[in-house]
Image (cartoon, rainbow, N blue to C red; front, side, top):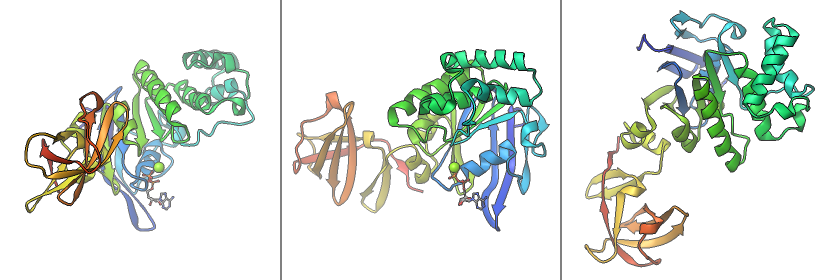
Length: 320
Ligand code: ADP
Ligand code: MG
């Protein structure tokens, strides 16, 4: 337990029909921090987020925000805002009306709501779309409206559930940068749910890797990548080779294998070479194990399919 954290989630449990989906989930998030929940589909990320947002009631456990227990508050009374996977914008309203809606519901008058909403729209670069019907906006713009709509309510915690999953690859990267910049500009404590390792690595201050409703490891992207506690975590954040050496199995990242062409005893055969731009990926048959080896393209050896090579191995993880 970390009682000094801004958001403290303690021993949260939730079952559906006697099946445990979130079990003894504990997480402490600092003010202004962006924490990702990373794990495969079905591991309980959305359920956890819904418990924090107040849309589901936990079977047990507590949630403290700024020292105050919030688990019994209704969603609308929690200083927590959620952006769902489907942005759930009001299709019959304009961009401005969508952003004003929450403010009006909280009792703010029309003119001050309009003023605040317009200000927020210019912060997210959509001032010129204020009077446009939201359904006329592009996917990226709609995502920005969804963000503007919650940011304008000045929440203490922002919850994002796979917010970019409906977008193409280029837009995802652009939106990732935009969310990060808004989040740090507002110093907004954020929990970001994703099953995309690159998104989690690129966006997070810390990543909580989830498996079967609990956190297996919590740390910075670097810690998780370089010192995973087990193979599951290692594979959640990057490719891992499993290499049999004698009667041992080592787990080794593709960039920690060296290929030598002209020295050392030949122990591998090139299966394929893929030029991926910045890196070149070689698939090598190493005594029956198929091993991926990544080399920065400027330093990549000139190898052909079927050629014999010598592999040597750098840092590895234990296979637990
Ligand atoms: P994730 O977001 O990581 O994909 P979810 O939290 O959505 O995972 O779901 C975790 C598990 O709980 C899944 O097996 C899902 O089918 C189940 N589940 C989620 N919501 C309900 C519900 N309302 N009733 C029954 N089972 C549910
Ligand atoms: Mg989900």
